[in-house]
Amino acid sequence: MPEIRVDETRCKGCELCVTACNLKCIAMSETFSVTGYYPAKLAKLECCTGCGLCAQICPDLAIEVWK
Image 1: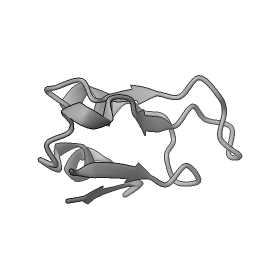
Image 2 (image 1 turned 90 degrees about the vertical axis):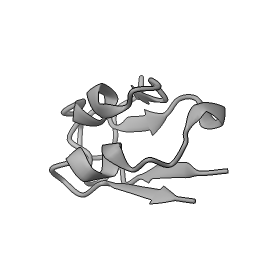
Image 3 (image 1 turned 120 degrees about the vertical axis):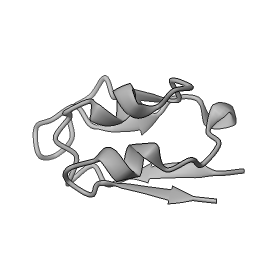
């Protein structure tokens, strides 16, 4: 099953990945990261298809897709 991994120290909470995910698998965390932003997170593990759009659109290279 594919999954995404978000490097919370790189994510600045721009929400571009949330917009790019057609299946709405990604959401913003409710807690701050150590850098003071609300990082993205995989909200619905079972719906991720591993398409990689979230990683491609991330300006901070904070997302990795694992298949």
